[in-house]
Amino acid sequence: MKQSNVHELFSRLAALRPDPKSELDYVNPYTLLVAVVLSAQMTDVGVNKATAPLFKKVKTPEAMLKLGENGLKTYIKSINLLNNKAKNILLLSQKLVDDFGGEVPSTREALESLAGVGRKSANVVLNVAFGQPTIGVDTHVFRVANRMGLVVGKTPEEVEEKLLQVVPQQWMKNAHHWLVLHGRYVCKAKKPDCPACPVRDLCAYKEKTKA
Image (cartoon, rainbow, N blue to C red; front, side, top):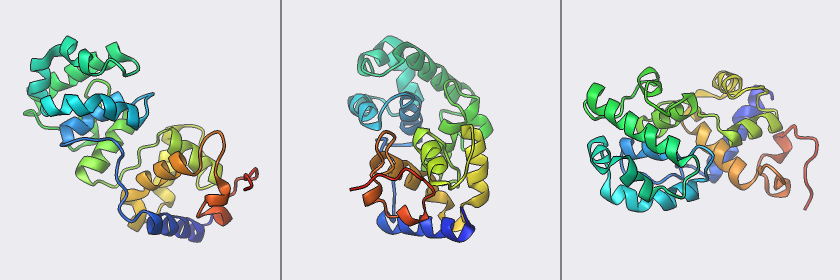
């Protein structure tokens, strides 16, 4: 996609959602981190349903350790990959207490040292909790970027690298949110709603749906 079109695309998405937010519910960086870890292979709605009562009781890694793995499971029993995620949340909570004074670190290297936190998850936490201009490439971002021809990449890492090169700096902080929300509500996986798309004329997708 031509750079002028990239600018226009984000300009339009920004006009529709000037202040986009993560749809994961959280109360502080720690609860955001927990929600992000839980969100793998889950919808945000499903995660929020499980964490609403959990985050009323647990807001710090110390409180999570006090709750314990079995106690945590009683709150998140509806979450996919329950056992692995519960174990990782307790491990990362212990590491936060032991190595980071109970605080969520604001560097990629430190975040990726935590159990259950990969590059995409670290990018989301850095962006949402700390306002850093990172792009977390989830299934929505990967699909939308490739489908529209914004960038073309075979892996999330490749798409992230290319997006960081082409997204104008003024749009970088919220680019991840705009692409996620566009993919979730308009450029959907099975049947994109092309007639309702605000950037239809900029999109390279050849099989656009009709009204």
